[in-house]
Amino acid sequence: MPQIEAQELSRTFRVAERETGLLAALRSLVRRKHRLVHAVDRVSFTIETGEIVGFLGPNGAGKTTTLKMLTGLLHPTGGAATVLGCVPWRRDPDYLRQISLVMGQRSQLYWDLPAADSFEVQMSVYGVDRTDGRRVLHDLIELLDLGGVLKKPVRTLSLGERMKCELCMALLYRPRVLFLDEPTIGVDITMQARIRQFIAGYNRSHGATVILTSHYMADVTALCRRVIVIDHGRILFDGPLAALAGRLAPFKVITIDLERDVNGSDFTPYGELLEQEARKVTLRVPRDAAAGVASRLLADLPVLDLTVQDPPIEDVIGRVFAESARPSGAGTPADEPAGASP
Amino acid sequence: MSGLPRAWLALLRRSIAGMIQYRGEVALWAIWGVIYPAVALTMWNAAARDAEGGAIRGFGPPEFATYFLLSMIVQHLTAAWDVHEMGWQVRTGHLSPALLRPLLPMWGSLSDNVAYKLVTLVILAPIWALVAWIVQPRFEGGWIDYVAAVPAVLLGAAIHYLWQYNLALIAFWSTRTNAVGEFWFGGKLLFGGLMAPLALLPPLLQTVAALLPFQWIISFPIEVAMGRLGGADIVAGLICQVLWTLAAIAVFRVAWPASLRRYGAVGV
Image (cartoon, rainbow over all chains, first blue to last red; front, side, top):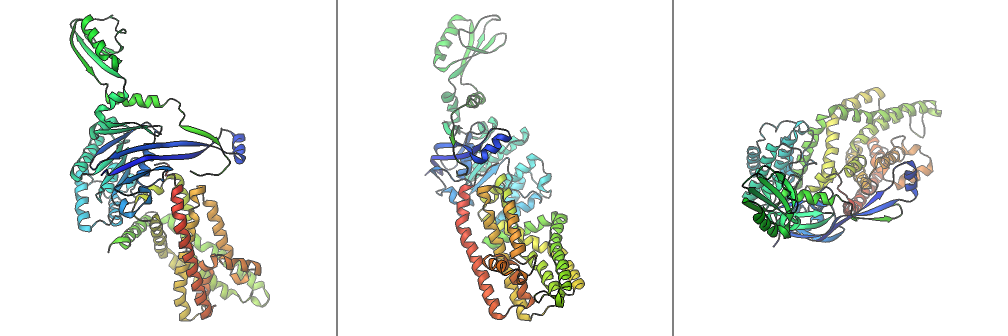
C-alpha cells in the first residue's frame, strides 16, 4: 500500500489584482478584479514506504502548495490525498506525530531561546518518552555536530547552524514521513553535503519516506532515484531520475575525438555546436536523429572515439524551467465583485 | 506526566523563558495596565468630592479607590490579546509551524497568556501594594466574597481569552484584526466597567452592558470582591460566566475548522 497517495489533487487561489496607481486603488473599492490561480492542478502520484522523491519545478510551479496540502496546512479545492492512511487536512494529532515538514525559509525553532530549549519543548509536545528522547537527542547532536550551538539563542545562529537545528527538531520524534522544502537553501556547499548525507542516513536507518524540493540539483542527484517534475501546477514527469532526460530533453549530446585538428570546420550540418577544443567536439542533436548523425560523423570525419549521451540533468531541468518562464494561461482572469473566497 | 499537561507545561516554561528575555518590554506593558485605572480613579475622585454628599450613587473616594485598585488587578489577571497576534500570524504565515504540531495552536497562545501574568506579578504586586497604601481602599466584603472572587476572576479570564480568540479568527477572512481588537477594548472600557463602575452608567448603557460579555470579565469579579453582591447574585453571576464560557467554546468548535479551510499558509 502506498504511503502517500494523491489523486487529482488541486488547489486554486482567488487572487485580487489591480493596476498600479491611486485611481486604480479607488476603483478597486467598487469593483475588484480577481484572478483564479490554479496553483496545483489535478496532480496524482503515489509514493511507497522508504522512497526519497525529488519534487522539482520552477518558482511558483506548485511544489510547496502540494507539500502544504500533504502536511495538512492547506485544504485542497479538489481531489483527494492520504498520507499514512490519513487525510492530512483533518490534522489528526496521531497523523501530525508521524510527519515532519522542514522549511528552509520558515523556522520551527523558538527564535529568542537557546536551541536546546526548543528541543525540550518539541519532545514534550510530541510525547517522546524522556529516556528515549534524551538518547535520540544525543545521537542527533553527535550526527549533526550541534554541541557548540545548543546554548546560543536561535536568532544568533548562522543559517547552516539553524538548518541543522531545524533538522534535529524535525527528527526528534522519529517521523515516518519527512517533507523537506528547500532544506539546503542558503547554506554553503560543505554544509549542503553534510545535510544530504544526514538525510540519506535517516532514510536508510529508519525506512522513512522523504519528499524533497530543492533548487540545487546536487541535492536531487545525491538523494533521489525518482523525481516528480511539476510546472504550472501539473506533473510533467514522474519517474526515475535517469529517465528524466529521455522524456523531457528532446536531444542527445554527441562527443567526438578526432585524429587531427579540424579548426575551421563547419559542424552545423550535424547539429548545434556546444563546445570545440582542438580535437574534441561536442554537439547537441535531436534525439531522433542521433543515430543518423553519429553514422555521418563516422563516415565524414577522422573519428577516433564517439560517445552519445543524454544531456546533464542540470541542463534538462534548467531547460524545463526556462521554458516554463514563458507566459502561459495558468490564470483565468475573472471580473468579480468584492469579497474573497478560495 | 504525559499528554496535554506535559506538553502545555513545556510550552509554559518556554513562554516564561521568552518573557524573561524581553522583561523590559513586558514590564512596560504591565505598567500600562496600571496607568488608566489610576487616571480613572483620579477623575472619579475629583467628581465625587464635588458631588453633593461627597459621593455619586453610593460611590465616594474610598469606594472608587477600592473599585479601581481591584480593576487594576482584575484587568491584569483577565488580560488577552490574541486578536492582535492572530492577524500577524495569518498574514505572514507564522501560524504554520504551530499548525504542524499535534495540539491546537491555542494551547501555545494560552501558555504565553499565563506566562505574562505570572512573570509580571513580580513587578505588579509591589505596585498594587503601593497604590493601596496611597489610596487607602475600603474592603467591606466577608471571606465568602473573597473566596467567590477567585472563580469569578478565573471565569472572567476564560471568557476574555476565548472570546478574543474567536474574534481573532476573523483574521482568516480579513487578515488585519487590530481595529477589531481596538473595538473590543472600547467595549471593555465602557461596558466592562474599566472606565466607570457599571452602576454609574445611564440606564440604556446598563441594558446594553447586560447583553454583552464584558461585565463578566471585569465588573462582576470586582463587585464580588468588594462585597457589593448578595449570595444569590453571586451564584447567578457565576452561572452567567459559565454560560458565556460554554458559548465561546461552542463558537470556537465551529469557527476553528472553518477558519483553517480559509488558511492560505502564505510565506512558507
